[in-house]
Image 1 (cartoon, rainbow, N blue to C red):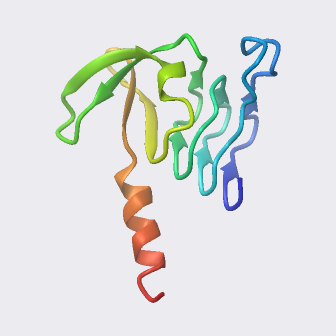
Image 2 (cartoon, rainbow, N blue to C red):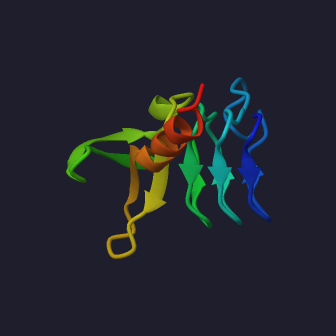
Image 3 (cartoon, rainbow, N blue to C red):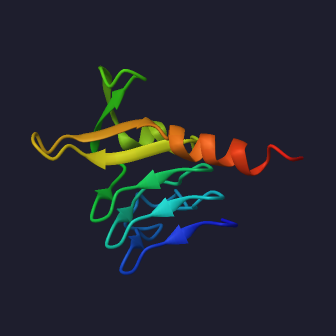
Length: 114
């Protein structure tokens, strides 16, 4: 999407390898880190940590605004949602998703003069 940044070596799964009927789209103002990959479509203002590959079946622990685990879902359930940050916990290795507050704050700051 417009304004998105695709890091060196990042990739998306093809339609057939992604399940046969899901087109992998990247929303506006997203950041896909170097060597990261996607098997789900992203909404706007999403970030995927460098080196992280998110497939549709990946188990993702969704965190609240305090960093507490709320639920664990398949990544396909988060497909197309805006303002998400996907990271891998450096100690547990768990795939986590939280609200991408920095992107939201940056976006509000950039458009404050409108």
